[in-house]
Amino acid sequence: VAPADVADRVVVVIDVLRAATTVATALSSGARAVIPFETIEETIMRGKAYARGEVLLAGERRMVRPEGFDLGNSPLDYTPEAVGGRTILYSTTNGTAALTAAFVNATATVSAVRDALNEGGDLTVICSGHEKHLALEDVVCAGRLVRGICDGRDDVIRGDGARVAESVERPFMGGVVSVAYEAAHARSLTAAGFADDVHACLTLDRFDVAVRYADRQLQLAGVATAR
Amino acid sequence: VAPADVADRVVVVIDVLRAATTVATALSSGARAVIPFETIEETIMRGKAYARGEVLLAGERRMVRPEGFDLGNSPLDYTPEAVGGRTILYSTTNGTAALTAAFVNATATVSAVRDALNEGGDLTVICSGHEKHLALEDVVCAGRLVRGICDGRDDVIRGDGARVAESVERPFMGGVVSVAYEAAHARSLTAAGFADDVHACLTLDRFDVAVRYADRQLQLAGVATAR
Image (cartoon, rainbow over all chains, first blue to last red; front, side, top):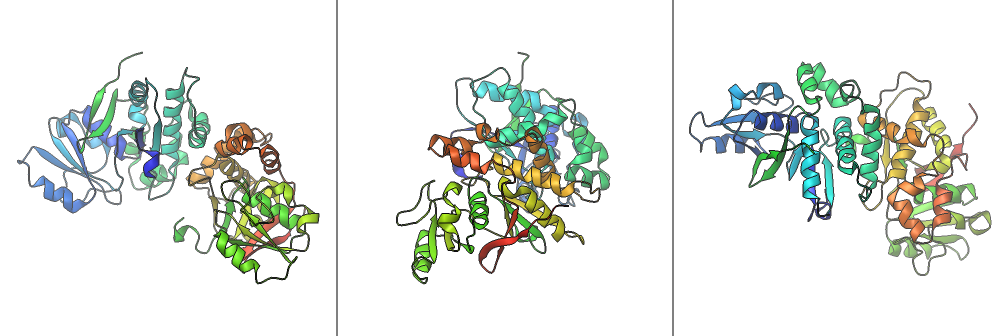
């Protein structure tokens, strides 16, 4: 991503499998905040600054929970019992910025973006992908956001990437579960025993929250209201 | 593009507007070879090694012919009268590798790829894009190649990118002319007075030739035969 693509813009980063899904789940389950770290070592180091019981170390390397960590990257583990009231130090291989989105909070993200762009402005949607390659599930999710953001607005100018995402989302309009059979990352997670995670990640609008990255924390960006 | 994505693979580079279209046009018009250069200076320098009338300097910067060059990047200028029997020293801002493809030689490229992969193997299709961004016309062209390459073959495993390209191509199956109204680069070329170029670039299978990059030259890779 070039600096010009994000300067002075609303930025949404999509990572359906599984980081953005897991973060939305954690915050919906009452976690105080999710603080992202790039490396395992940083995460452990920062954990030592907190009182016991106040934080959880969470994340993944090659799909599984790092040694000594409390939680892996399965959204199903981020229950209110496990994470409520706690700060989560979270290490994944994908970065974070501005709003993060997945299918589980797609409509809430659409609302947050529409609010942010109410007075005009530009939007960049970044598909995280998987291991530096395009991930089908992220492009489908981007298409859903684009469709929602443009709904009823003839004044939105869509770039080529937005048009690609819209085309790709079209066959999945009825439901996104079939992404599980088409996307390479979904198939490799399923093969590794994470089929329930894939299903959880491919559930639309399970949470009515947008997630914002600010002050180095991932936090709730307010509950979306019906409109 | 990571080295692992191209090592030991058949590689097709797509650049519909306009480099791959122009190169296919030049070779179909009887140019002896097209030799690509990265910079204007290199192109001029190499030109001095040839006898007068043997070579043409060609290329573009910001859509137009560089000063002192014989040809710009409009495929319409690469007529048999202009380029027949001559070597073209060609400078564009996009690189080259293996096979280069556009709509004008899509079916011939499909045949060449199917021949190359007849005994098995892997294929990487690279969409050049425009100014470091995705270009809709290149993704649609990639989708057409993927569809042609997979036609009647159940054994082809498509990655997420191939599936995205297929989805994007679907609405254009009937014809690719409407890409002109949707793709940002097509619209900016049209606005700059190159509408005829856009039309020429969005013509399917005008040439029955695949174009291969080998020995530092772009050359005909043989005429495709009916199958």
